[in-house]
View 1 (cartoon, one colour):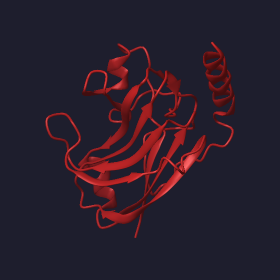
View 2 (cartoon, one colour):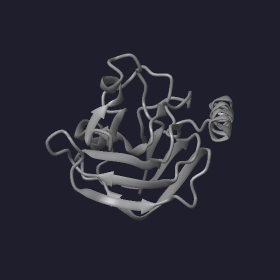
View 3 (cartoon, helix red, strand yellow):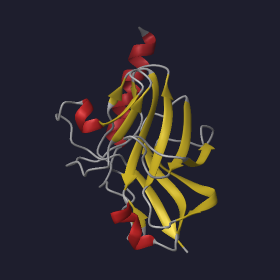
View 4 (cartoon, helix red, strand yellow):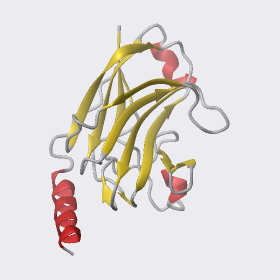
Length: 186
């Protein structure tokens, strides 16, 4: 009972702090999201929240590099990784291009991870994701107030082993975009 009370208090604090330290997306960002609004309450499981940027979006950055990933985290999960994938294969992210364990550095609020090896943008599709583990039901990955932009809300859950847009997972009831951004530079 004490654990539930403590988690409830932490969830409320995380929600109250949302939006106060918003970092606006820059013009050199791959992003669909607006300011952080909240984060969904997700069951205990392994998840991966991703923003999918098709060639029509990445083509304007051709010849540049993906240098950083920024994201909003409510209650830090028990494990967290930054991942980047190539073009989709059968409705899921393609080849993994990058992965880094950021568990020790993740905090409530906006997080920044500089890629050890920046990824060249060649005009092909990119998926930028945050993989995380919830040992209990909690809110961790942040989202905006919507409305959803196609590609801004992909979610993998170990509960069903599928990549499905969050809008579909909620039966169209929750229209948001994950607070996940890719910072592009020379």
